[in-house]
Length: 489
Image (cartoon, rainbow, N blue to C red; front, side, top):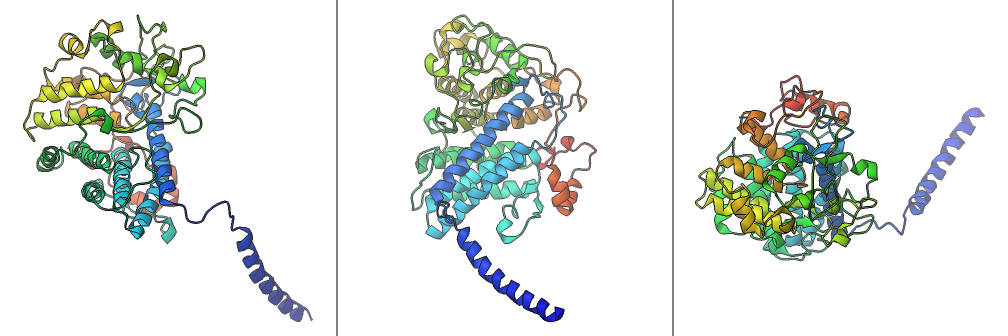
């Protein structure tokens, strides 16, 4: 009897389970959540989320590592007590999920221009990831739908090769058919995306120039001319001034905003030159923008005071706001025209192209000043020419180029760190950089600049075999000192 009851129970359970599954599927088919999200919505989301990740990384990490700013409370960044900084890994890979969907959908639709936009955005995101982590999941990344949750780690050299090839392909796609919808950076202007793609190629060529010959490719991009030539072409996101889509720092709590002050390194240089960007990067200690005074926080030390970041980054209680002062709030910066001019100047310095170094160096400084809408009067200058000729910034040696590019990279994703790391290695350490010095206080890395972030802890537990393989490629006790391919010289 018990046997028959059990058999009947199993049969009844199977019937109800079958019916229940159908009912459950209907119940879970939410009409308010479309199954197929449009390409434009995915593209907008990918742009906003990836740039927000970059801005957060600038504020918390790269501006501080490069000593443009300094942490005042949570000083592990300046003390070189580094970890995986998962905000970067998780944030960028999450954005890439939508980017890959855009590429797939646009490919199905035969929309070349949207493919091109997504490929440029993809290259920018992956370049940030590989430049800070080295070898990363790439060719097998974002494959969860095919049930590959343990991707291999591609070598950085292979990633760079593919990124450069894809960027060239993206430029060709952007000259093809189709339309661009959901573009919150250039509002569908394919010509500006072409210039961003080519400008990004110049950046990647410069980053990898010590480990491969990039001269011919660099020269070809510059000579064909489709690169940034003015500030209105540069890759920045003009955020709305209202919550929740503002620039990353604007909605912060006051205490979190105060955790980052201007660094003594950058303030000392800019005060020495009477650089009017100080009134934009920082807010005067005396809150007097006509007769400003500034101070810098020593990276790594506590119990100090440094100037707070500028009006564009936070509406501080009791202070004048950017709107009232008549300047815009901060943009999310992917790449500026100023950077391109400095790249060209360095290309000339390296003998890759012909031209006048000072001409492009000067343009790099001026375009940065113009972008920040500086006022020369409070710093004793009549105009840019007066500043350039008499402040001490006039070009004299390669170190000038590094110094001014460093200042211009304020809040440019993780690139302030990438460039300082490159110059640190090229000049033989801190002693070779006149505008920087080792951080002070207790230090976890003997005051040597770390060369990379750690891999996230979940990679060690959830992707152990591939993690062990990639970790073996960096035969060094402290992984933060492991040299990735672009700096392995």
